[in-house]
Each structure stands twice: as structure tokens, then as C-alpha cells.
Length: 295
Image (cartoon, rainbow, N blue to C red; front, side):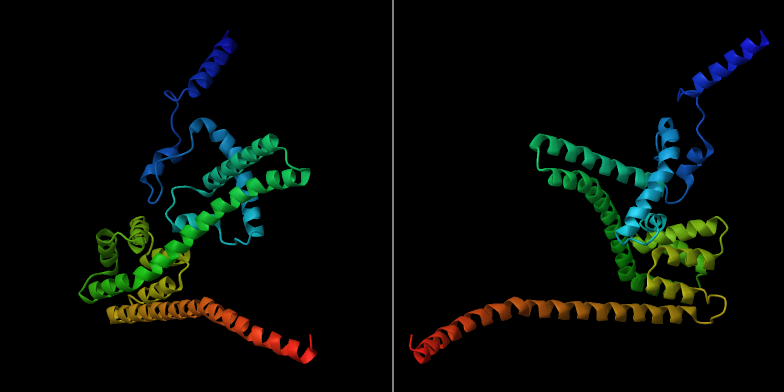
């Protein structure tokens, strides 16, 4: 009788545990909305087992394919850089879903059109790979755009930070004010830095984490200057000089880009000029050759 009661209790617990109304959410799911930079959306708990099994496999397989395609940077680092709400496992699952959809579409097209066997194999094998690379390329473009935006915004933000420090603000107070007043890429990164400081991380350590995640040389130099907060007497002047150096570097890059584009403009002009000139030269040359050969 006792055994039947235990089995009935266990079966009832398992049955009610599968119903979302009775099931208690995991601790990680309850804390997720309160973590900085992570949204409250998550994978459906009913498919959590499938995600735990297929997620690591797809993550490792996707990393291997990305490395073959020439992408060496860590996926988690790129997702953290652009403040994506997705973790690497969820991103690889969505990427795998796109590849699977492309594979299904390729199979339907090949069945409907019945192309040659070589073209069928190429279409079926290339469609999922193309879908995978398109998603990977979209993430790479977003990451590069974020880095470029950081580099463009950094001189202005650095000058504001230097003025605040020179006027008597502390390092933490200046970072909090910049994070609250601005809306750009640097401000979003500084909000994460401020959140890390609020969690008990040292200011220099939190800024170093930002520099490592951003992977922008100008950010590394600025963080190196900010690390002298307790040693330098006139930190605001040093930050202002660093902002001027970054602005001069951006100016040189802009001048180089303009010169390259101006040189590219002359290519079609040169071709358009040489081709008619060669045609005009070819006519008398052909007449002279025919005169000397007697034909």
C-alpha cells in the first residue's frame, strides 16, 4: 500500500510538473530579466531538454564551419559587443533553423524542376551553407558597424569625460552621468560598465572588460589613460589629448578614403579617353600597313 502511494505521488508530481501553471520557473529564468544587457525572452521551457542536447552540438559545429569560412573571433564576444539578447547556443539554433529551412526549400525546388544530378547535389548542399554564411555575415557586419560607431563617437565622449573630471567629478560619477545623458553606442557600453561597477567590480577592471569586448584600439588607449586616475594629477588634460589624437586619426582615414575614391573616378575616365584614341590611331595604321604591303 505504501509503495502504491509513493508511486501515485511521484506520478502526480511528474504530471503536474509538465503543466506550466504548476511548474516553478528555474532560478536562472527568474533572474534573467534583472541582468544588464539580457532580455527577458528565453527559449520555451517545454523545449529546454532539446535545447540542452542539440544546443552545444550546433554551437560547436557552427564554430567549426565559421572558422573554415575565415571567422576566428569568438561568437559570445561578438554578441556581447552588439548587446544582443541572444546567447551563443540560441544564436546557433536560429542559424541552424535558417539552414534547415534553406535545405527544405532546395529539396522542394530540385524535386519540382528535376535538374541534372550535379546541379541537384550542388543546390542541396550549397543552400544550407549559404543560409548559414548569410546569418554569420550579418552578425559580422553588425559587429563591424558597432566598432566603427564606437570609434566615431569616442572623441566627443572622451572630451566630455575629461571636462567632467577636470571640474571635480569622480571617475564613477562621470561614467554614470555620461551613460545617463547619451544615447549612442558608447553610452550603451558605459551603462554596462556602470552596472558592472554596481555589482562590485573595480572601475579599472570594468573598463578593461569593455575594452576587451569592444576590441577597438582607441578604446584600449582611452582605458589605459583612465587607469591612471589615482596616479595622474591632471587626468582631464590627458583624456583631452587622447581625444584629439583619435580625431586626428579619423581625419587621416577620411582623407585616405577621399583620395582613393578620387583615384577610382579617373579609371572610367581614362578608359573612356583611351579607347576612342586607340580607334583613331588604328585607322591610319591599318591604311599605312595596307599601303606598304601593297594589298
